[in-house]
Image (cartoon, rainbow, N blue to C red; front, side):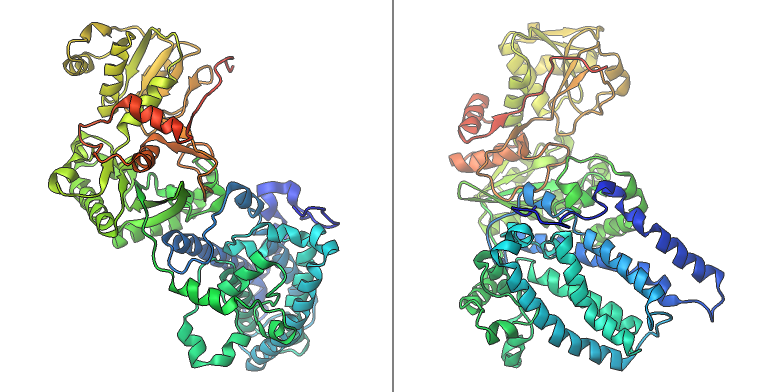
Length: 623
């Protein structure tokens, strides 16, 4: 929102929320009906294809969003190092409003303006006229309108909303108050109306011009430089007719320079070009791929999880992972993404962050959660993880967190197999088990004397049980085989372990493998404390569910604009925090396989680095 919002700031359909696309329903139904009902000679194909243009614009923008986040995470060509935050993601979440607004104008114009009906596929004169009208009136008028927007009166009421984003992403280009978009649409419609009135408008010229506007807008705000230098060397005058991402990035950092739309010629004419434009362009172009200090390896969970990544849909990535009904409509795209990850078969960069001079990166393994439970997939998964470790070693990464990849003894012995195969690794492999145990222990309410332990007996489960017995807290298990396994690992402290059939305990420590039947048998008011990476399904409204082992991150952690799976904003899992703390403290040992760091040492070091425990309210019972 602008600092002093002016009139017509809000979009007319803001109250509709996610249902705003319903405003296009009458036009879509009408165009489809006319196309189906009329015979071939009477059909207006251009009117029917208008929906295709709208869908193409949405897809085009999303491609730029994903590409920009991927490239800026890798680092090559990045212009500004400052990151995105949730505030910016929320502010820019209505980037599709301008597509809806333009669609209404397109549909209305195609029905009521002369020369807009039954457009031919191609008219050469219309394409040439579109180019001339854009390079002349549109660019010239935009330049002066843009300069006017930077006058204090208009800037404070309108344009400051756009400039709230210092570090831009592609969709920043269309984040303006409604009143600004009205003027922008009037400017961009000059070539369309000109070709319409001269009867030279065609489907190609219309679609190409709209795509050109979107392409240049997205490119100018993508925060990585991609225009090769040889292009300007081959044709030097091109610098007057095509801007670069670094050129427009200066406008967002300097504010009073580089006002031009897509053609810098008017900045040259009126002497408003920033003198550092060429320098920033060259330095950005030379920036190479970044080497992280701490690397977090993760994997996809469900087929729809691709949309929840920072590279996916910003609105989903910035919220805890929940299933959305409309994703079912996208099953063809979901299937295509699964096939693509299967064919590509390589890890890819997901996000980049910075904390206390450490550069953090997350890489995703192109495997889904189900595949980790299929024994015949173990070799392929381990090969991908091992390749990532070797690649990280060659890059000079200090610490690698296994994250979700540390899923059990059968897969890779909690990561120990990689250290065994490569005993001379300089990179430290961390599975985060010690911090997960510490968080679980500190989540149990003070004064607890007994707990019920349920779920698969992982490395973390055994360590939690051992620590609880040392504290004198009684552990109850319900299955004989679990009782025997725990007895062997408690080293003479089995007196703190009880085999019982009662579900009456109010504190449940749960992991993967907790059945729905068991959960339903828990008494009212039970607190479920997960020690696994995946949370239990919340079946009870009269019970309390804590988060999986995780902590709040310090404010100094930069570029946090996505949620980690099902965790709230600015909350990070123990398995990920452990690698960061390991690097900050300079610890030299591996923490994987059956080795664990000292739990108290890890807990105290984590707190000292600014990470804070999570607290949930258990003061009342939900009905």
